[in-house]
Image 1 (spheres, rainbow, N blue to C red):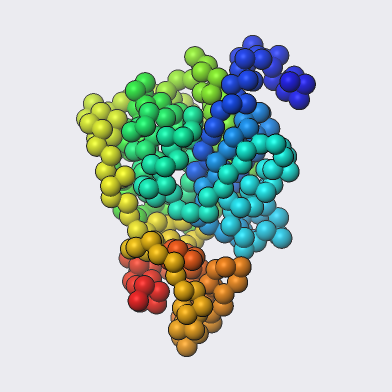
Image 2 (cartoon, rainbow, N blue to C red; image 1 turned 120 degrees about the vertical axis):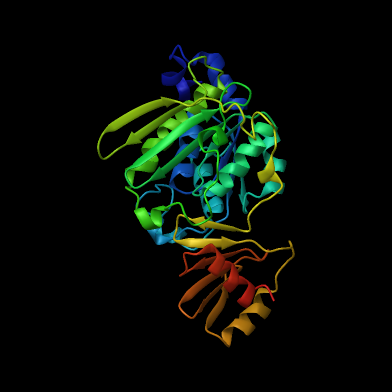
Length: 332
């Protein structure tokens, strides 16, 4: 306990609260700036079991806001790099990484196994899916999002307050919500919101009565402005009232990511012949297999293809166009 002495003397935690942190299991959904800052804060606070899920690769434009990543990590899977860096902070911690899209199958597998889920995602489509899984399995989670110079965060405790669909009843069409590639992101913003998210997570894990379900905190770091709004539970919410978990049944194959890319999922899960695909695409443009991934550039559009058939497509902003290019060049 000597390592955490400055924390255990807090009346909000104490020795018993520290013990609870040590046996808690947390799922970090997304390993960009928001997710990695939150994961590091929780690990340093004493959470010893962390599951990381992310589908993306480290890119050079991530470095201005992600303290765990360096230039040497560019091109590697974010979840893998984050797990390695976190293990150097606490070698005895249990850090599990999934280099995968958080789809209904994986959400149904992981959410029941954890005590809490924290948000490091960069798109609303996956957040609705996560909300369904957490409400279904009665697991608390924290919604947190950042953009430009501001961010917002809200604890969601199934059965005790509103869920994400009480806050945003109707999901926007894919590609209609601005991402940080379009609106930009101030480097310190994710760290500030991650600090708030991590503090809320610690309070939830020690079962503090100070956490108020549905309390939405908005922070604009540039304008130094804070607003707090109490979100009410929707009387007709399809998720937390009617318990209709449609996003666990109807997952979209496309998602617009923060890194100015569109992710397309394969219709069927099967191992892709990357070298065979490389030969075919080489006749149309540049293609190479590197570090177990296929990188191609065709007609000004960049493709990163994973062995399971998942692809990140850059150079187009319309998910429908990205889906068409995927079907044209990859899904034959």
